Each structure stands twice: as C-alpha cells, then as structure tokens.
Image 1: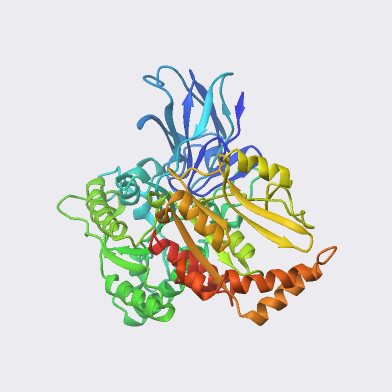
Image 2: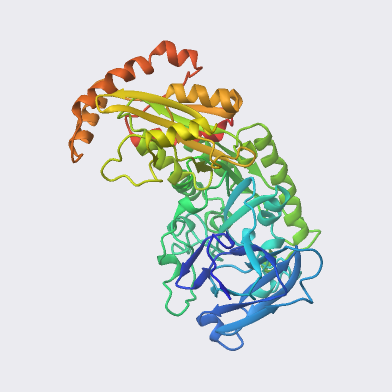
Amino acid sequence: MKIELTDKNVKLLGRTVAFGDTLLLSLSGSGIEFEYTGKGFDITFMGGEAAALKDNDVNYARIGIYVDGIVAKDFLLDRKELTVHIGEDILQGSTPHMVRIMKLSECAMSLVGIKPLEVSEGDTVKPTPAKALKIEFIGDSITCGYGVEDPDPLHDFKTGTENVTRAFAYKTAKALDADFQMFSISGYGIISGYTPDPAERHADQLIPDFYESMGLSYDKLDGIPASQDIKWDFSGYVPDIVVLNLGTNDDSYCQDDKDRQAWYASEYVKFLKTIRKYNAGAYIVCAFGLMGDRLYPTICGAVKTYSEETGDKRITTIHLPEQDPAVGYGANYHPLESEHEKAAKVLTEELSKLINNTKIVTKSCAGKIYCLMGKSSSGKDTIYKKLLEKTGDRFKTIVSYTTRPIRDGETDGVEYHFVTVPGFEKMRDDGKVIEYRCYHTIHGDWYYFTADDGQIDLTNDDYLLIMTPEGYKNLQKYFGKDKVMPIYIEVETGLRLLRAVERERKQHSPKYAELCRRFLADEEDFSEDKLEALGIKKTYQNVDLEETVEDIIKDLSMDCTM
C-alpha cells in the first residue's frame, strides 16, 4: 500500500515541493516526519545528476533516517534510485514510532526525491503534531553544518562531513522544541560570495537573489525543474521567528574597506525588507560572530537604519561567540560541534527571553477565538481571507450558520452552513446554538448563528471568524472574556456606502432596500457606546488592504491578548 507524501499523511520539513509522486528535497534539514505503527516500510530515494556520477562522494546527498530520535540509517545517495527498508529490527519498543527522514547535506551540491512510502495493509501513518514555535534560519555554510564532522581544518568540503543536525541552528530549534526551516547555502552572502581574493567579488552567490525560490542547486532531477526556478509559497510555513546569520562570506570581500561595508549595510537593509514582506508577523533576529565578528557593528547599524526607515521594532541583533582556536577547527576552518553548541546556547537563551517577554506569539498562546467585526462593506470578508492566507496554520476556521438564502458565488459549508429556520430551531432546542442574532429583513427573518458542533477545541487551537458585536458578546459569555478577542475594522462612511452599492450591483437580483436597512442598522449596532461597553478600544482603518492586514498580524504576534 502506498502512502503519498502530502501534509495530510506526513509533516513536511523545510522547503519541500511535490512533483507528481516525487517529493523534492533541496535545502539542509528538509524532509518528512510521521508517526508509524506497523512492522516495517520501504522508502525509495531518487538521485539527480550528481548521484549518477561515479566517485563523486564530495557531492552525494547525505540522508539521515531517525526512528524515535535515534539514527537508524545515515548514508550518501550514490545512485539514481535506492530503496531502503526499515524493519522490525529497528522498529522496537512501544508504538507509534516517530520517524524522521531528513537531508543532512546542503542544497547546492545535490538534490533528493522521495517516492511514496510502501507499507502493509493495516499499518498507520500520520503527521507528527506541529510544534508551538516555528523558526526559519537564513544562513550560509555555518547554518548548514559545513565540515562539522571533520576535525582537520586543511581538509576541503565533502557532503559526508556536513551535518545540519550538528550545527547551531538545528540545535537551537531542538532546545526550544521548535519546528524549523533552513534557507542556507555555503559560500553565499549579501553582496558577495566567499572570495580568497578581495579584489574579486562573487556577485553570483547572493542569498537575496534566491530567497523567494525553493532553493538553489547545481544538481537536477529528471523531469523536475531546477529548485531555483521554483517559486516558494510562503503561506505554507509561517515562522514566529526568522534568524538571519549572513556576513561571513561578505567579510572576505569587504575586509576593512568602509565603502564596501556601507554597501553591505545598505543591501542588508534591503534584504530585511524582503524578509519582512514575506514574514509579516515574525520577530527578526540578526545573529553573527561565530566565524569572526568584524561585520557585527555594521549589522547593528543596518538594523538600526532599517528600524528607523520602516518603524519596525520587531527586530534585534545577537552576538554569537566566536569559535575558539584552542578547541580546533572543522574542515576549511569551520566550527566544530562544540563551538556550534556554545553559539546555540547563547541564541537559545536570547530567544527564550524574547518569547517569555511576550514579544513573540506562538501556539503556546493557543485557545482563543479572534472575532473580526465591522460594519457592512468594511472589508471583513477580504481581510479574513488574507489573514488565513498569510498566517499559515495559525488559525482554525469556524463556519457559521445562516437561514438567509445563499447568494451568487457562495458555496454551502464554505461561507456559511445554509439551513432552514426549522433546522435552526431544532439545533437551538438541542442546546447546540452558542449565539445567534436575528435580522428582520424585508424578505423575512434571517438568523445567523454559531453552533457547538465539534468545530471548536480551545485546548489546542486559535480560531478566526467574522462576528457581530452581539455575537462577540455572547461568545465571551459562553467561552469567557479571556478566550474571545476583538479585531474591529473601520472604513469611512462614504467609501463604505460606495463599496456596498457596487457589491450589490453584481448580484443576480440586487436587494437595494435590504442594503439600506443593513447600512442604517450598522450605525446603531456599532455605535461608540456599544463598542466601549464591549471593551473594544483598538480599531483598524481599512484604507489600504495590505497595510491593514499587516498591522493586524503584527499585533497578533506582539501580544496573545491583543
């Protein structure tokens, strides 16, 4: 029996993309993780052009298979296709077993494709639970774990001595019990890749040029686009923290040249703006120093400039301890594992302070219902969709119920569950209606209501829904004031009326009288006195949609209690 490698069956680690039945792995730390119950399974790995070359052990992809946290297999993919069996000799002890299959080496040298799992009838495979905290690490060879397993600094790079799990980034994520995603490429920087000669700038090795893609590789799998040509969907993984550790390779070019350092700073600021564009709610941490800290003051200055230009205060710098020469070096003078551990300890402590000071919102804040409210045509529906799109799996949704007729373009079970009035009355009599409101329209009474129908579980999840002030009040009565939070949207009255008329004109049978009734009723329902009585103090002026959405996301990230 085949198990497709989708997020319904396994947890996807890092930037992975499926092509047909092949899941492409490119970057360090990418892979899959799942809970397995059974007597054994097979998994087939597909290699690219690098795997087809003989005696290419410098570049073969390194893969690790972990069962219950223990290394079960660790190998280099030296052929185009390899099937690995994980049997009862490995699957010992209580079930289910936690299985992690991960690319230990970086993206540039080699790619890996994974085919569907082959399991027996009756076996079960399901994704491991998401962690409360999500981190993305952006970096270079240090983040990849370059040379970490080779204690000879005179040795050159080999994928066989590179191991992302022994590097500071992975160790930090593990210490914080966080999900992680790496975007790291050896030799790459902000304005130049590594250069042994400062007179020669490597302008083709810049992380900002590839950050919006799945990754970068000189390798290629049959029938699959180059990873640098695959646009990355940032909505699939929404980090709480982004750790940026870039500058070591730039320093080989900048040296002590002040003009070059100033150029580096200006490009660093530009890249921070790109990071913020795709990670609106994340706290950005700029860490540096493990292989020398000459550029650290420049980075601090760049962060200050960025914050002044944008007003963004959700950013900080962290100085990492420089590797100790007395301890020794890994390949090409890269840090050994003990030095990575020191850096991870510092980074973990600093990130813990940020989290504990409630500057970062994580799933540990889960258990709240966020109610989007606003007068008709204030843009609630659009903002609702944008928030879900930009916050990934942060929110579960609640589909409310209504007895009004379905409108053109609506789908039952998507915008609302559409029921009859007798259906509503039966659910109310059965005690399943949490809150409801009735609108006396020219077409009759229309009921809108939220039901206790199994959709809401505040022990594990946050929820986002569109609500009226009265419904918000009743939800607070039902779940408690500390569990129900407001997000109130406002739009200038004239603009709102124009939007309402334009929307109604697009309906097959426009109901202008009902539009006017609703518009006037909103003035009473959303009066200043009523908003004040509900404790709604903050409002979001929906003049520019994208800015409004980003403001809401930032506030959600800054304080679990809004």
